[in-house]
Image (cartoon, rainbow over all chains, first blue to last red; front, side, top):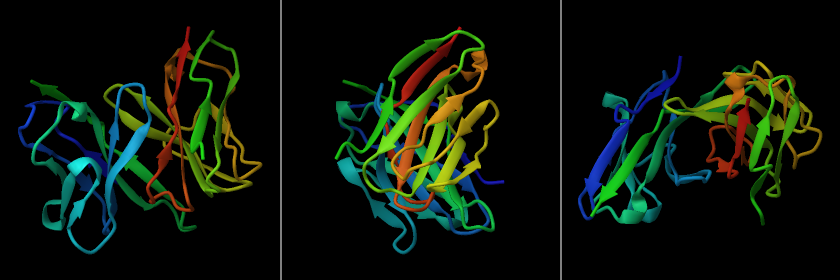
Length: 117
Length: 113
């Protein structure tokens, strides 16, 4: 069965420091991969996506992620975090659900990011 | 465009009551879905729809019903609320496929007493 693992429940980073959030997936074929961000009391907003091609993808707000097939990983990175980056981050994999071509997303359990001055 | 609109934003129910969570999108998206978000469990798919008149179950469908009579609306019905259904519910839509980027509503926070 398809699954997404975000091993870090909570990460604390100093403002201006670099950030890497980990994501590993389990899926037989090449998946569609996403990172979403959720601010408190809000819905999820798409940061970036990988469908195919270049394995390093750029997203909004200065985030990037690298798809590594050999490691089944899709880690999210940012060179220098800002206090406004404090939020919860979700990795997700999209895949075909059944023979009718229906598709769904499976989400990881999320990583909460705290920024300290 | 309003995007994905969910109502109500908050609701408290008693065990056994029924209610409908509303979801509407104005982007002419074919694919719509409902998720519940619980602490430490991420988002889990309840039901989804690939177009008007077509719905299917997700990971956690028990206790919930859906229908899709129009492209715009995808209501979620709780038939007999249980405390285990206390959660935050999100509706999402995408153009025509579940693996496409999803547009999320702001959520409905539901408490069952």
